[in-house]
Length: 187
Image (cartoon, rainbow, N blue to C red; front, top):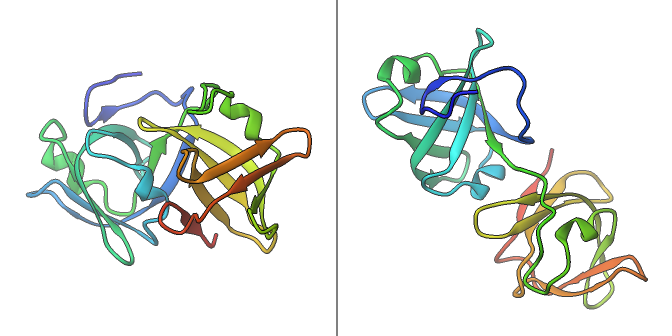
């Protein structure tokens, strides 16, 4: 698998991929992609991050993000100059994914974040948010994907400002006010 920006990748990938949406429009002159339907998972991206773009002809490109702008209905990604304008022109209608390795690292509190998978997630007042369906590593911190009882997912960072306590014996992650830190996906 090539690590060069904007070049084809092999079909067998070891990274776990999170689909952040479809390229609604591509501006080759600016190397800009408008990705929708929503910016939910795009919030996991940072400048300098790598994305995988699955073109309609089954080709996959691995590209570095130079800048990202989150808008109400889409994310606007500016790719680095290493991605050719011809490749950007081919990206309309493509799927954009981010690499999220499963995390077995430690949290700030010293426990392995994989320890959280399968636990219930609730507020300090006892209101249940859902169950930890998966754990992802990002450059900054781990993120838990919480499956909500009525459907949809929440992405919650594993940081001291959010996680109040973890009680493995009771099978629960207790969270503080998550509103400033959470991304919700209705799908």
